[in-house]
Image (cartoon, rainbow, N blue to C red; front, side):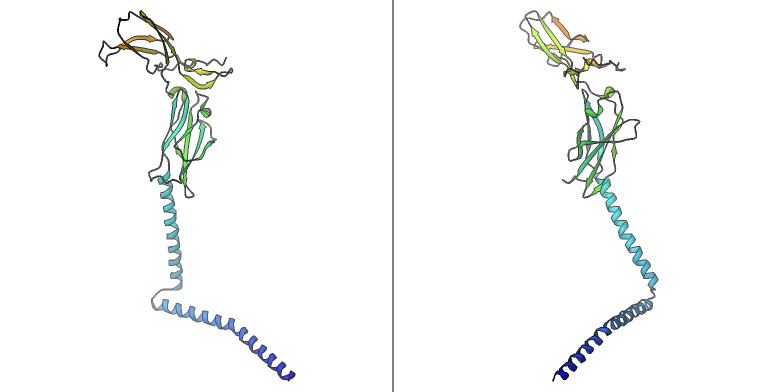
Length: 277
């Protein structure tokens, strides 16, 4: 019984090994038959294997080209538009508009700046990956006689746009100057006006902000109107650089309105070295 059992086990093991050894040969013959059959069908239709491989390669290239074009279209559609500097009393910021595509919520922007003539662009850390459409560059443009450039790029879904560049900007030549602050002291016979020029964001050594009159020779215009005149009529009462103005010959019982619009700056914008004391 033991001999028979051992014979059966050995015989069974041999049969299993024989079957497993024959599988690779069978699969190989099957693949070869399938390949030959496919080649024969292609040959019957006048298509060679080389032509098929070429067609598959061209089809793959076309898919790649479509993806590239789609990415390029997205880059163009999110590229920031109308990048420009805006400055008021040397408070300077870079502004832009979103791209021509309707702006999705996930678009973020990156801002860089540089001084004209330099090759290195600097990242603005506070404006690196923001969703706003403006960036404060007041501190970065503090050398107000230097010309600057700014640029912005956008990213959406991992696709980056090209940089959008601003025009050259020089704060000293292009910053808008605000109107003066007016303090009024009045009596029955005269009005005393005290004009205080707007101040820049930059400070003296002692900490006070430097007034714009330290940079420019500002020319003030003071207009006055009263309730006896047409509301559109106004009289120029003063033109000059003085900070204290006295207006006399007032009419009894009349109510007066005083206006001091944006000061004029000479066209040459004569430079004055600001006092730091």
